[in-house]
Image (cartoon, rainbow, N blue to C red; front, side, top):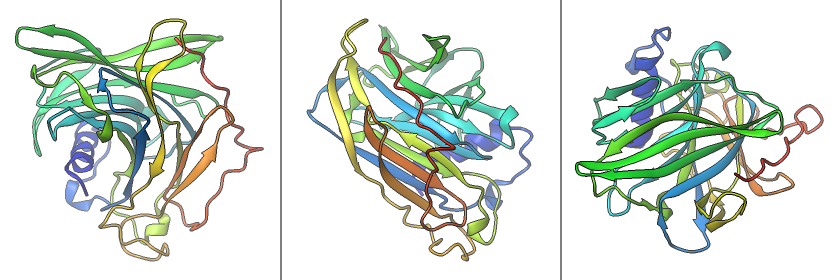
Length: 286
């Protein structure tokens, strides 16, 4: 399991006080990455990505992740759920951050240090959401970045600020080749692995550097590349003692071709019934 996924798990266990699970009891390697290929290399100061969560489930996380150009450090932003739907939120976290502003922000340490901000939300399976990372002001002692969750309400876009986080000055652009997603079940140990509660998350291809209000255009676009199974995930048939079944499927959403991730459950060949879970409409541009 990567440092980044381990880190998120520690956060989730700390932040959700009602989850009485010790880190040593966590389900191990119940995760998988999603990788994208961009049509050109650019200095990234903004990332936008639409996501759809037709089936959320407990103790699961589904973020966008990146690294700063010239660094192995970075951050992530995404929807998650703890024990029940009342504990759903969206989290924005940056490593090596020194300050944060938002409704609910705090320092973290353990596998590293940084700042994390969280915003309570109610995940609606019938709508698309947009993750947004945006470069803000450069100041004498660092660089500010903002994280947003955007959704459509009554036909209009609503931008919800998760938080603003300050990092060292050198962290002023994102490495486009580092932009990925991952899904993870971070709850307590469950055996056999086919008993891990099932969730479904759909990722549209991320785009970078929005060209401005009314344009609906970006400087660079991506397409789905592949999805790597976590090396330590021993779950193959649903009968093993750890990990989880994870399936990535290329999916045509009508307005974009992305990937649908099936995390957990006991079905080795899962599918989503489009009559029960119709694809929500595309979100309008900003």
